[in-house]
Image (tube, rainbow, N blue to C red):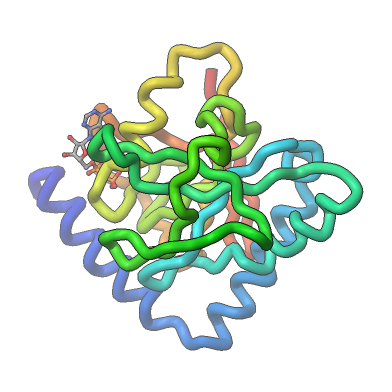
Length: 203
Ligand SMILES: Nc1ncnc2c1ncn2[C@@H]1O[C@H](COP(=O)(O)OP(=O)(O)O)[C@@H](O)[C@H]1O
Ligand SMILES: [Mg+2]
């Protein structure tokens, strides 16, 4: 099958799988991912972690975010959320996210912080970026929803020697043998599922 067609077909079937999970399966997945993330020194030592709010059956990071806010009372980390870039079409900005953040809804019906320049955390200031995904494979390739937002946003920092660690967050049912990748796809450094912690060596 032609790669772009294969990607479209895969997106459809993998999205159906995760949307078919029950509410209780989703809740358990969210708690298991929280626990897995909190067991990683990279996470507990990070001062800035980009998260996301769930959409389309994605794993809910809210329990993890609340744990970060509890930890924050004594130390790190800051949490941020992606916001559709108001000027650079197809790119994301990351804005600080706290209990006090005012939220609005974007064109995809996803909640995001109200845009305020002092709240912007530059992408490269994050130690960790937690990324939603539709599919992944054992090489750490990532298939997104098809908008290319993370690929575009992260392309500009690929040349930097110190970069955020990219961690894909996924249900186990989102794993496939081998994803059809395109040259613009940015692979992740690690994948966390409710039952797995996969790590990939990249230079
Ligand atoms: N660095 C980039 N610069 C310009 N366009 C890009 C870049 N990365 C991705 N795109 C475009 O975004 C679109 C969606 O990318 P794709 O990888 O299929 O989506 P996703 O990563 O969400 O699964 C593609 O048409 C691709 O050309
Ligand atoms: Mg991509």
